[in-house]
View (cartoon, rainbow, N blue to C red):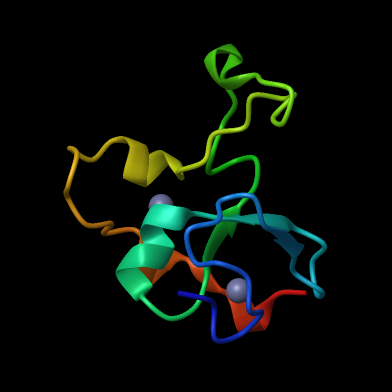
Amino acid sequence: MSCTCCGEKLNSGMIHKKDPATGQKYKSCPHCTEANGSVHVYHPYPANYGQTPARVTARNPHGNQSYCIDCRSLKKGVQSNAYTRGTLCNSLV
Ligand SMILES: [Zn+2]
Ligand SMILES: [Zn+2]
């Protein structure tokens, strides 16, 4: 499945955008996006993600979290409830 807005894969958590009005950075949350089902759902980055040394790899040198803070607190298999507060792909650049 691809985003109907930008065409990137919906399960990608590595997409970074920003709000053209405020300059605030955003990152896609794959779990929130899955709950939406058609376009990427973004949250402010890094505030709504955080970083952890446990995730530092060659591809992820800063240890960025993939899921937003709300999704990481969910039990496995529970659908995101934070996606309704997210920002959709088409309102960011
Ligand atoms: Zn998108
Ligand atoms: Zn999320």
